[in-house]
Length: 419
Image (cartoon, helix red, strand yellow):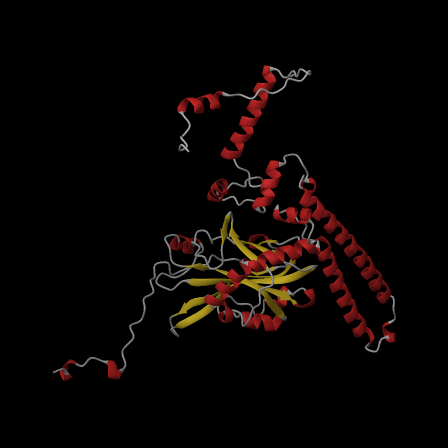
């Protein structure tokens, strides 16, 4: 048998030139579009594509390159990448009606589970109502036993409210968009989980490494998120702040995660004031205010706008660090007042002094409990002298120097004994 040969070039050319003819149907199709409509559609497509790549939005960006572009501009994308891609590819469609079969089937299961939780909530409310009407003398433990059972049932009710909404995609979307109502248990729960995931760990690390505990407060388990800002500048825990920036009182965002309102006390204490006579460090209070209402829906506190008659006992003075001294830790301590009882400023003013201030003594006198703390640091900079002069503080022309420590006798160098 003769060996097989490769196909010739003319054969390949003829095969490539063959075309398959499609059968023509009797129906003739005619496009009902005009040239102007074509131009408009092309312009809209070009405009949408241009705006997406040149001006990406945090709600719809899902390309990694564009996400990095937003992050460089200081804008964080909202939600997960999968959610942003779904919204971008389905414009004008409500979030709970996205045309994805798996998503819609999952929503049916979540809706059925929510209906079950709502029935349990109604049952728990009926049990609480029945127990509230029972005479406490019928219980073995009296009224204390009744109140303990009511607290337990209210805790279970709050838990059921969270479980009813925790899997709702609309709830998660509103929380990621920053539109959650902090009066509702589900949004307080999600906010706490987000805070405990990373920001709380950073806060605990700063107040532990910089010895706010135990130098300022004996012990602390932060339960409230605290953010410090001077005007438009946000200050992370432990950051250095120039004297010109901290010349005015800061603003605090104290985010609670519990239901109800609390009365708190805020103190700004510096435990690093050099004492030249004792060669040690003293503490000084730069700000002290009582009776500050705080809730989950009203977390903002401007220390410079509190009432001087019923709240502020020691007004804000600019913090400063003497030239040559180590950095100063300006500790902001938030303390809860017992049973939300207001503190009488006239009584508190009798023992409140700036120099030698002690948070421990303040806690014991007024029955206060620390719930959170943060700090920023101050050191001598180019603006400190001007701040001290404007505030009428002496010593801007004085520089501290370390005292020379004499060596121990057995470590002293004695040239006469050298060989």
